[in-house]
Length: 218
Length: 128
Image (tube, rainbow over all chains, first blue to last red; front, side, top):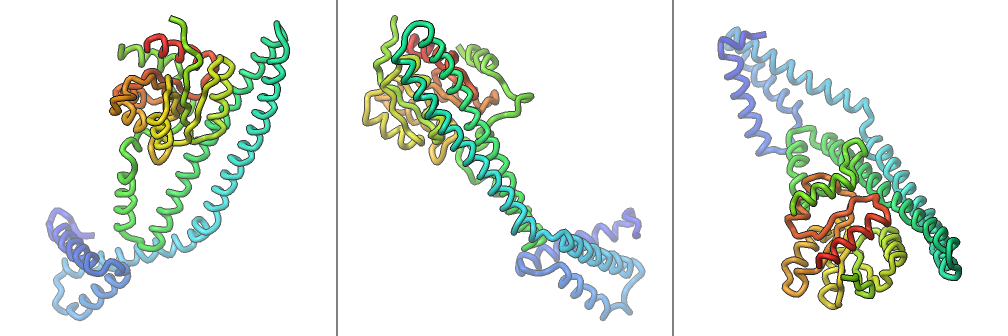
């Protein structure tokens, strides 16, 4: 390894980076191995003229090329196509099915509860009050379906984001994928940063916290 | 001053189950004139074409969110004093601050109970 203190390696790498960026701008589909191959070929032809430091730089570039090739091979063995083609769609379908089934169950519960409400209108006194208290409690409890639905939607959204990012890494294996993912975050509605859905109980404010906050504005 | 429970109430949520729950809870506290909207644009159109005394809206809806609906309501000369309660699972401080800044009348965090709903309605309509 070259001593960075001599300034040659950092300058050489900076120059190489800037040349690579220029090439990538002109040829966005350019594969890293192709660049390595070209650099290797160029250095090969001028190898007789290389100084010791330039030869070391060449070895560093070759090493970089091998590292990229190894990383690509490792990614290929992970069978990332399975993640986007099967695993994530399967998981999101399962989660969608949970939402559908709980919605159907909630619908049935609410229907029965509304029937009980109608019955409570035909009686009076304590039985009517008891029936209404029971149905109120059922209505309150049924809002679980909205909360779990929102939580599952958050998970599905996260899975789809992972799916998109994995697909981008597979297709481009370069900086452009990261940049696109970064830009994507700012494309939504104006209050998108406030749409976080239900918080986990440990981090959430309850109604009394909300009331205190609202009162603080008065 | 007693609350006029015959007033028209607009409930807004893109989740039909939630609309059904709120409608039933309102019925139990004797608000029987309840209309539903499933998104902000639908709500705004109903508000502009109708005569409502209270709006109860979810926040997390698309394409127009509950916050955007609130901002539209407050920007409309005919609707700007309309009592507006936000019912939402969004419980972060910045959400409450943003809703208050937009002119929300009260804020209920999900899951909520019937007593909280009744209490907030009474507070809002008592001050209206």
